[in-house]
Image (cartoon, rainbow, N blue to C red; front, side, top):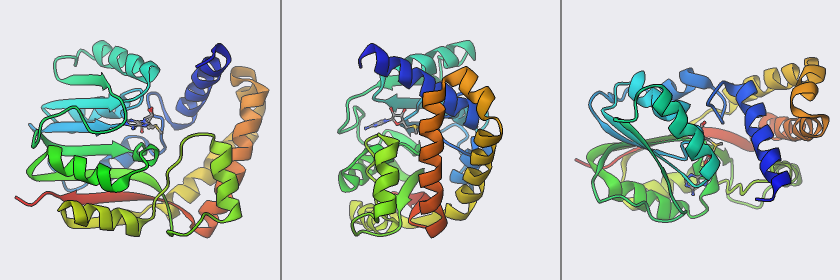
Length: 259
Ligand SMILES: C[S@@+](CC[C@H](N)C(=O)[O-])C[C@H]1O[C@@H](n2cnc3c(N)ncnc32)[C@H](O)[C@@H]1O
């Protein structure tokens, strides 16, 4: 990353954490994490967190949900460093580990996790079929995959409004439909495959976020710069359009590797 890009990335992460909570690079806070893993008992379990970001959720899987060991993986140096610092400061380095990985197969043995978790990160992984097969491979029999991700409602080309929104995000967004995830998980061998649409919830939350952004625009501009705030107001405006139509539909995904 060039210096300008690095600065922009730092500022963007800081801005998102201001909006979503310290250590959170996705919306919903601890409550939404609890909903993703609803009904699953993590006590004493070994957990993989794909796309751990700056690590607040990775840490919470251990501290608030009782996992014995959590490994968070991410492809970005900066977020891995921040996550490691957060975990060390919490005194949990013995039980929570962060690993920088390269995209592709996971560097873990077969059947080595009880739960594979992910929050709003697998959008960056294009090959959903390979992802499902990898998640299945590293899960122990009877283990669960429980994730949240940002989906598109259909398998056709994105509408012009959706294409515009994706271009504003400026990230490698590989949005897949609930049907594609469902198929990929079943083909990989998962049972009890379930998808839960969170569009209604996030639409409401995003309207509130937009209200905060516009009402406190001057304060946000002073802290993060006028350019970054203008960019994000444009992104949120475009996102709200496709949340309103339901084309942008965050989902929870679930599957169980047969015992
Ligand atoms: C929107 S952030 C979410 C981070 C965290 N799960 C959270 O909710 O706070 C997405 C994260 O996925 C990471 N990521 C992107 N591609 C990845 C890949 N192929 N494998 C693992 N992580 C990836 C990014 O670096 C980023 O930290």
